[in-house]
Image (tube, rainbow, N blue to C red; front, side, top):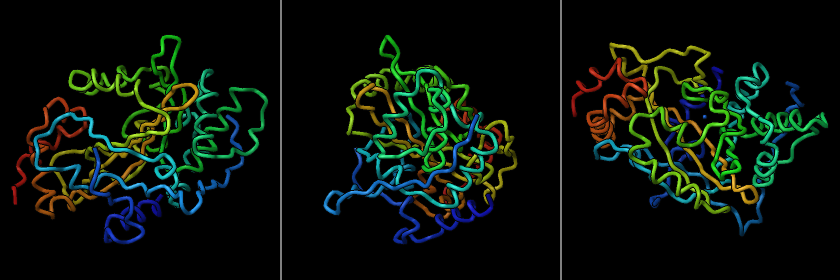
Length: 325
């Protein structure tokens, strides 16, 4: 685990032109049982002329513009292969450790998930090892463990029910931001978002139609952020990681960014939801004038109930007292 955190900090401190910093850069345009043998993930390979663009998340400048805080569905065209094809060996080692220690905590596979799991494998050209069971439920679970061990991002699979409503049916989430995958079993998108104050009111009427119209082969990416008192990737509630507490210690506070991808599954019309975590020291934002200005403006205009939901209430007084310069 220490090794994984070191690599993350190294990424944060590397110049954005370096090879290890590609996860912090972005082009300018844009609109979380039986264990099979750990597989070796075979990265998707393309002919030279068909190489996908590198996955380049939203920059810090795009995440913290000089604007009031608001809910927004800022999206840009994504690439599934690129999003899932940048494995970090240290992060993969940590994922495998969590999946071996407690698969029930990090893997979800219900009785209606085998088809969407197979579609995800096909989409990523991922070849699972022998699943070791003819039982469909056990085989599906083992396939998910294989996927979760070979891919760096977390993922959730939603399947449409008889009324064509998307519901959570499967996934592997090793690095949640204070939530548990099992608790999302069978939930709709609206139900999942209901716990976020103001989100359904602001964007509920936009999100559902967008997902219904999402076309296979045309995925979209977005990002959101929060604050954390630890750079750890796995913030499952059961681990009781430290939370933000007053007084604010800027040197022990991190901006936790979730880069997300939304991709329609071609046969079932289900949804693949990928989540990749970035951790950036708060000090980095505060030391750059434009980022500081955007961050402080977001903090000062964020609704109090949303700040409480994000776990920021104990340090809001200190955050609001930070000077502009």
